[in-house]
Length: 338
Ligand code: TYM
Image (cartoon, rainbow, N blue to C red; front, side, top):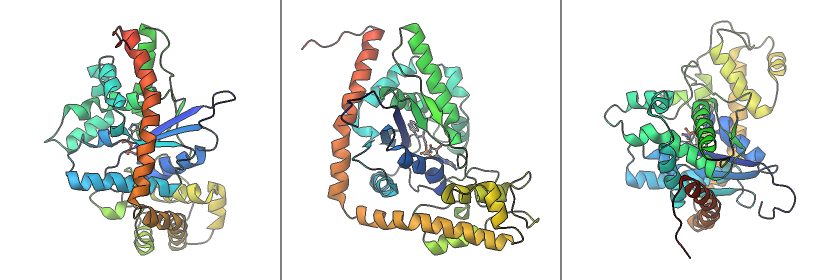
């Protein structure tokens, strides 16, 4: 990605919060796609650790979560020789642009964000301003890197729309400054549901741990969770209405094996849910095993992890700084003379 000889490759930006457990939902909705995009795009990925303190974190645990999330993403296949992969808190420009964008984002727009409504209901004792302005920081993340595409799961669609609106508003008030990004939301896997309540998104904050698969669950835990997955009483594997549980399992199986829903239906014709759940569980175990093995190696090598994120930070800063300077000039600030 460094030698931009030919025409400019399209830029991908995305980020994930290091807020503890990373789930199969994060992996299938986002991470697996990030890995696949690395060869064809100029990819920039971040651990959104500034976003994470919108919910209270215990410092020692937070520090550990950040490092573990960094190692896990490398284990998933983020390749630092192909992609720029840094920590958001290392690149100060994000917070600076977020401030500016806050002044171009309306209270009403932020009030309509469903994630804000959900999270403020869940953390009623800590409805802080950061939780409210979170989408402007996310917009800054994306816009600093002139991203053309942002691969995310369906739950980030509303934030992405707001980012586009902010960019268009700024471009309209001044002159074209920001690239207006498009979301890349996968056809299958964009919304992996809870295994215990398939009408709810799979989420690491679910009190019922049987509802989600974490990237580091053991094979036995994974098999057990799939065997207990809530389905329906029809006992026929097909994608349809009122089959949220089976639809979800089919989505997971399809994402991992690459099989279409028709192929899956044929494969399990005349077979019960028990067989199907076992097959989905086994496919997930097989997918996660090499990732877990790489993770266990990487997490022992703190020096290597430190080298990767420390080298990435100034490279990200250099790109981000150029955008911020352009923005500040348009707004009317005077630069320091050199
Ligand atoms: P986060 O950390 O909640 O989730 C990371 C990615 O995982 C996707 N995801 C899912 N996909 C499918 N099924 C699910 N059940 C599921 N749960 C989560 C999310 O859609 C996301 O793509 N605000 C973002 C992080 C962020 C960001 C950004 C993303 C900060 N700055 C700039 C894109 C661009 C977040 O909290 O994601």
